[in-house]
Structures are given as structure tokens and as C-alpha cells.
Image 1 (cartoon, rainbow, N blue to C red):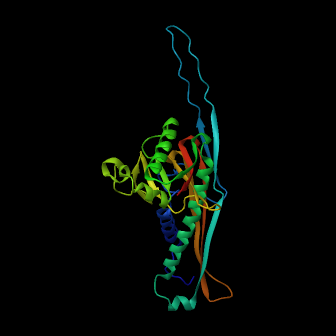
Image 2 (image 1 turned 30 degrees about the horizontal axis):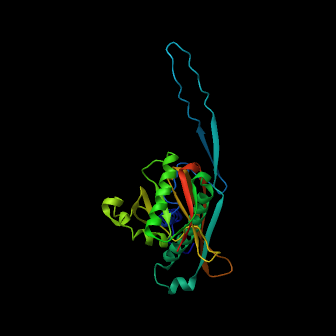
Image 3 (image 1 turned 90 degrees about the vertical axis):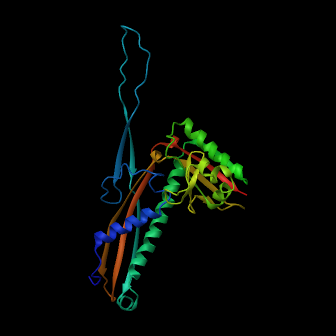
Length: 283
């Protein structure tokens, strides 16, 4: 191995950390990693068991009681997404280039991996929303209209007993621009914060952490883009990932080293009623 400073375990950990720092939909607060466990290879399956809630009944003095039989329901999280990067470092380039160019290339690989993972998680969440919480198609052109959509999301999530603390909504820049014109969003006493706490978080409104992203699922086939705006809580969606292998090797038939890494991941919506969505055209 010609790259003497390359330590696979250290590089792998650094790459995974950079990946998480760039995620929007696949970050903590939007998803959870409760079932990530120890992923050994692509295709691993995480089995998730849940039980029904016992019923509550009236009791009569000296009467008999009814015993509920607990039944379990199983769901599976399959780690079936597999992405890799691989690049060559020619000996001549290695001699002539400035120090750090390999690290810079690895950062680029991390960005591309994060974009692919984020798109997959966003698509998974959008497909998993309970139909009763899909508020329909809307055209929004005013700050009041943007804020009203958040209130619709809030109503749907309250009805589904979604925890109030930790709700999020991911919006495109055009939607965020409308919110910036609404005093209820920009005032500290109305929004509750002036700090961004998550990747892309730009404030709070109607009880939601507002996250701005360029990766909002978008249908651009028509005259105007149609955004799938998603809201919910991290309990709804679980995500698991692993950088399985990162290695450097001396290449045959050329003078250079190869550097490659493999990223596997999967996501599943476990609680569809704790999500809400809308198809939004912004005019």
C-alpha cells in the first residue's frame, strides 16, 4: 500500500460523520435510528415487534374482569440500498498535487453519498404517509397561505396523537421565502427560537421545526414545480446505515492507488399516522 497515512477505520468513521452532517431527511429529529443495531452487510433485515394496547373497561364491584390477550405485529427494516465510491490516485498526481487533495475528494464522495441517501429517505417518507393525513394539492402564493398549511399539518398530527415536542416540516426555499414575510414566523416570541438546531433548520412556526432543503421531492413535469412537503415526527420513520468498507489498494496495470468505499442503508415508515404531506405549487 503506497498511501502510508491511510487508516481504513479512521477514514471510515470520518466519512460517516461527514455524511450525517449533510443529511436533511435522514438526520436525527426527522428519522430515528432505534433499530440500526449492528449492520454486517447489505441485505440485512432488522425485525421490529410491537404489541397491541390493552383495552380499558368499566369495573363493577365484585364483578368479573376480562383479560386481554396481547398480540404482536412484526415489521421489517431491510437494509437493501447499496452505494459505493471509487477513485484512482495516480502516482504522478500524488507527487505533484498539493497535500489534502485525497481528503477533498473523499469529502466530495461523502456529499454524493448523502444526496443519494437523503433522496431515498425522502421518497420513503412520502410514500408512507397515511392517506388521511395527505391534505391534498394546494397552490400557495402568500405568507398567510404558507402559514395556513402548517396549521393544517398541525391539526392532522394532533388528531393522530403525534407528540407535540419534536415535530418537523421540510420545505423548499420558495416556501421558506414566503414564511420569512410572515411576522408570526420571524418574531422570536412567536417562533420560540432564532437558532438553527438541525441541518437546514431555519426557525419554528405553528409548533414545527422548519427545515429548509433543496432535496424536497419535486415533480417538474408541468409548467410549475409541484413540491411534496412533508411534516411529522421522528418516531414515524426509522433509518439504518453503515459504511461497510473503506480501503486503499495498489492497482494492477497502472501506477497508482485505488480508494473505494461502500455505503448500505435502509429506511421504513413504522407509524404512518405520525406523518402529513401536501402537494404544493408556489406561485
